[in-house]
Length: 145
Picture 1 (cartoon, rainbow, N blue to C red):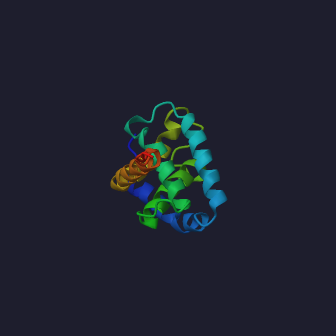
Picture 2: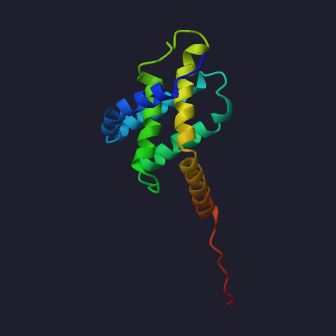
Picture 3: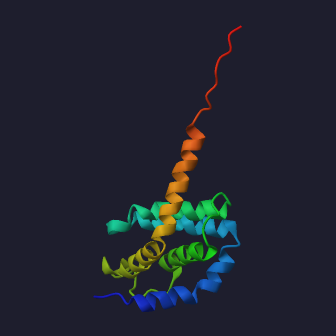
């Protein structure tokens, strides 16, 4: 079975205005992120994108908290849109169908990760730099008396 990328893109585009309004509600975003993390735990194997999903969730959190603003709001909207689709969207394949029922969810997440891979790499670099800044202790020289 092949997933129709154009249909997925159409579904994401349809949800843009809804997602933009959700993005104004920090509690709603956090709820979506927590629900997404929980749902991802239930997916047996999500392939090459598995490592990028926590990064994507972290980037959304950092953006919402205004810690990381070096990304277009459209990028964040597309990522949250993929999460909303996974959690509440009109599924192309019902989640009730074992194994293949999550195929469309994975395809939407995979597409969002693929489209935004450069932005995720930039965020990862920024996050690593922030961690270095937090853990680096300033050099202090003890003065002799």
